[in-house]
Length: 366
Image (cartoon, rainbow, N blue to C red; front, side):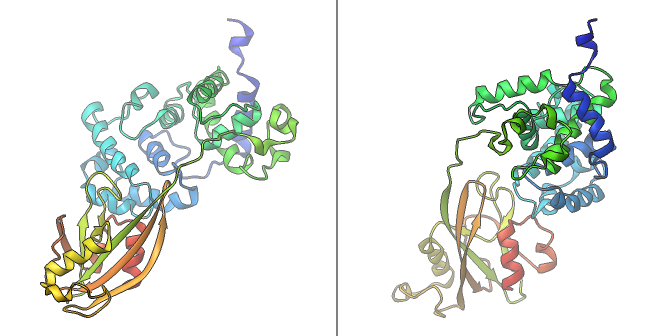
């Protein structure tokens, strides 16, 4: 075997040595090769900061110590524990993935990225993270932090919004992986890239003076590290107007419905949603059997029932702004809405999977 094949690339050697001394080694999902814990952390950390994930991670492990426990849990309990973490498709995929691990792999996570990627909610980078951290497989990770580090080190200025350019970056990343002592080197190398991007190679004002690969960083040599990575395609944002019915009975219970498995707030519990004020008013008119002459009444009038229009608010999603209007009403019986629902007391709804704006609304309006 030639020397070139025996020695790891300089970048890998440097990062492995740096991580051992200066990297993050205190997080609860580190220093373990349990694929369940590593996978759980990787899913939670997608588009979410470490500080936010810590409490959720501990809470999930308390309720679901193993993948078998998670697979056997009701979806409502999983969604309830996830409530507030956002990007709820992750929770649905998390639950389905656990069930697939049990049904397809006998309750044990597969050891290769190629098999891991066949599971729900596991993409190429997540599969590589689990495989490299837990099984020392020689595969490249590529989350946002890693893209930033690598594009700066190599001054890779191709537009990553174009798939062929991202594929080239993946190939470069594969070529840069350690080639020796993989059992220890692969987990440390993968962790080093994540640590470097999270602590030093920041999107703005990177701490280049403390960077272990400053001497080989072409972006630093150019004097413009913040130029990388290059991604020109902008997220196309949209907006939607929603009307929410906050119905409360004499006991103080709130009427909540489980959302369909697809669409906004899928599989979560929510106040009834309507596309317009007119549709919401039609539901209220059917309920209260308003006379035709009363249909012109304003929604905050007290005609036939006690109605109150709460202040409107905007909730920002990744690709969409939701402009929410809320009508609060006292009801003796269930509202006539298209979806099945039930009355929930506060001790019941606080543990449900609720969209963040609905949870805030209930907490501040009852």
